[in-house]
Structures are given as structure tokens and as C-alpha cells.
Length: 155
Image (cartoon, rainbow, N blue to C red):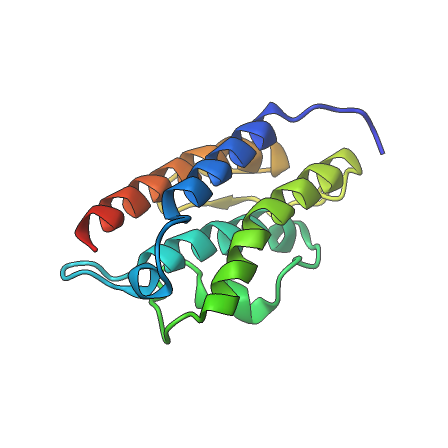
């Protein structure tokens, strides 16, 4: 394992801590509420951060994700909450929010992502390798933090 530094992952960790602070006082009912005019709820947005990072970093690099495929499918772009997320599941999601960034950093240092399948995202951004992805993730996560903040004001 190398001693490489990945400032984007540091930014990602800070964003995820901000997400946790934003939702820490909310009840499961509040986290699961889908306000009128919205397709998703707060806990969906939190879990979506994990699912997206796992898909973009691991699956597209031909690696096994750190979460089950069913988790990625439940929180992928275009999905909607299918059921209420339990208090225990919420705690698991919160823990994954931080643990997956630590594992990502370790796997980046170990060069686990050298084989990457390039793709173009829904905004037309070309993401050709893991460096493109780790530069993109803070943008994506900031956008969803904004959604979480908006949803929080409506519940």
C-alpha cells in the first residue's frame, strides 16, 4: 500500500460528516417522510451517496462492492423508496457513510481501481478513470446534501 494522499477523499469525508450532523436529530419517521412534490426522502438521499460511490468506484472498476447489489439497486439514480427504512437500517446506513470512505481511501492507495470502464454521466460529464470519479464525487455529494437540507425544512 502506498502513502499517496487523496484530498478529494478528505473532502468526501467532511461532506459525509456534514450529512450525519444534518440528520442526527431526525427520527426514523422524519427520515422516511417524502414531502409533497418530491420523489425521495432524506434517508434515500443518504443511502444514495453510498450506493453511487460503490457503483462508480467499485462496480465500474470491475471490483466487488462493499455493500450488497440489492442496496445499490434500491438507492440507484431513478429509484424511489419502496418501503420504510427501519431504525436499525438507518443506523447501518449512517455507519456505512463513514466506513465506505475509509475503505475507498485504502483501496485507492492499494490501486484497486486501475481497470476502469469509462462512461458519461447524466450531466454529460465524461468520467474515464478513478481520478475523474473521486473528483466528481464531492460535487455529487454536495448536490445531495443540498437536497437533504431542503427536505429537512419540509418535514
